[in-house]
Length: 219
Length: 397
Ligand SMILES: [Zn+2]
Ligand SMILES: [Zn+2]
Image (cartoon, rainbow over all chains, first blue to last red; front, side, top):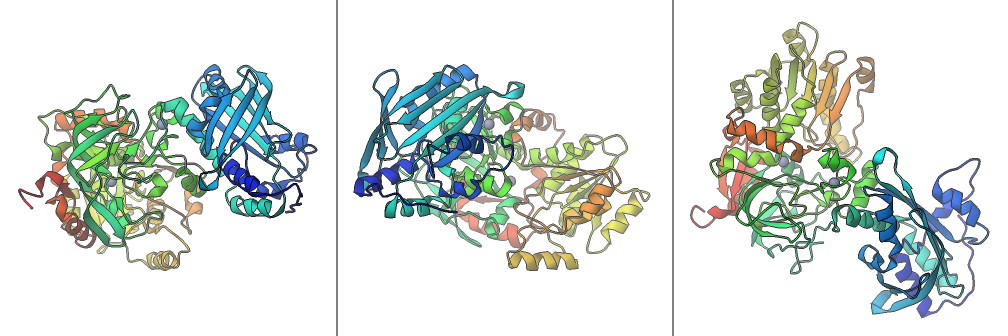
């Protein structure tokens, strides 16, 4: 495992952005541990590896996370629900809001530590209805990131396979190290949870919780 | 409300806690009228199930009256009398659609599901009152409980049936039934059942209903063996007899066609490998004590079926894979798909084909729940099943 440190300013805002964004993790995943197996040898069809190879030049040491889940619903429905970015806060932790600005641009507000928020804009780089949505943050975003979600019919009428591959450039310096340390224990865990919640919403109409009500916090 | 709360190993108390509320549209709130202590609750009581937290409300076998219904539930209404399955299932996912409810993809909350995925490779369904591995849902040994996906699970029961007649639909009756179903019983079959606790006793009844020629029950508690015999089983007391030898004698040397391990991770036995298991478990090298499973596989006839309704949570070593493969056995197991069996089993109860009330040895007010646990854990011969009645505390307590 190697981790090179960039020196593009690591201030408070960046710390907030890093922590908050990593928590909203389908979008931004601190996944230094993903780099354990970053020397693919021979043929490889797993999304993380395949895309990582293509993205390798652009995302240098950037973490790339691949996650798949099957949703028991038609592809058109799944795609159109995902295409509505404004619903992301329903199943993504720490994403406060995503506001569509026009057909392709959205403004994201992410929760940071101690009540702070971080904002950035993304634009859709590719949109093939019922097949694929890809987006990318602006070049000057505090945490440069990119996502690509594909939708396929699952075999045997099982619904839709969603494959989410997310990349981001980890910030350098002390903040980057801290964040990597914080999240390397659970690589991809947030992404997995967010896909699970999306699936729950699509299939059951609600998000499963063990909470017993507003009065108690038995979550 | 009052609820039976887990504080630690051999430490459960009845505490005052917040009432549950409707959280999601498909929820219902049930006012509990009867709730049982399960053999698997003893695993929690003994502190051998990980991810329990002090403050967790226990209980996964319960029934009662619907007092509140979420907006998304059009099936239940206030006043309905329902029995609630211990397995929480969404009814909409791939597994639920296949009626494999205990494999539900959605009922374990997203943040809790990581643990079982890490342990087992896949997330498990949510269960009531059974650790955070299965979702951390509050259980039903309480005055009230929140029931998620209540339009799928609970079955409405008619007023002419008493609580005690239908309560066990929540777990042990369908669990015993599925254990027998997993034996794929054919005409002339002998089924051997290890463990004459509630699940074992219901498995015996079920196997006989399904047409088994003989059912052989194995335990060491005389009272439980007596109950098994009353249900029509032949019995082996493993303190008196060598189980393998006895089974061979009773099956003309062929061995049972199907074997059921209704004991699971808390098997009580005195053979040396059991002590070895105990030592390993104490040293945390092995989490389950699989003595019975080994014995069952060893005794099972060639090409036979091994059914495991007993709860296993972690790893076992010395799994007799050689005997298992060489004899070509089939292993079937799993948490019970309770929802699938509710309607047919309720019908059999109505037709008096299955009796469940014989099992109950103690009926106590909820307030005496801790006594119930003590009795069930330490006086197993006489304590076959404890039912707690939350409504009783004032009048009878
Ligand atoms: Zn039970
Ligand atoms: Zn389900």
